[in-house]
Image 1: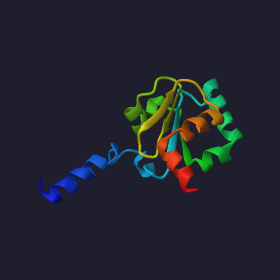
Image 2: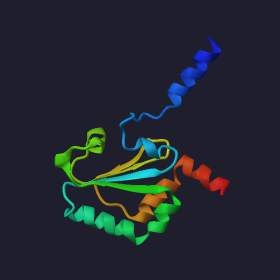
Image 3: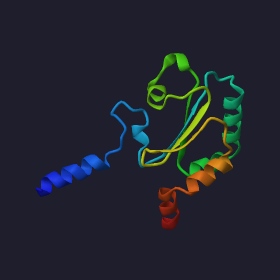
Image 4: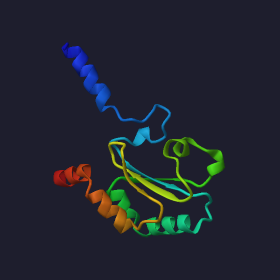
Length: 129
């Protein structure tokens, strides 16, 4: 196998699965997107989730979490097309762009933090600090 071909193959295999028009692509290796879907801003689960996130924003910031919301299913934006949520849905991505957590109910910042802290990338970050 030619060395140039092997290098190209390694680059292709290491490229995240996000398409160019993917709104999450800008966060790969920089942030952990937390995407929250609901059918309305008035959904009690959505409101509860947002209240819980607001209680400990520094915990999320220290883990490089960026929160994205979509409460308009009629618009059928790129996140909805990619992730196919039903009703309320919470989806946490790791920094490598993979889905780390998908839940149909609100989660507290402590639960989210514990889940993030178990990720191998987060463990590496903590070792470097």
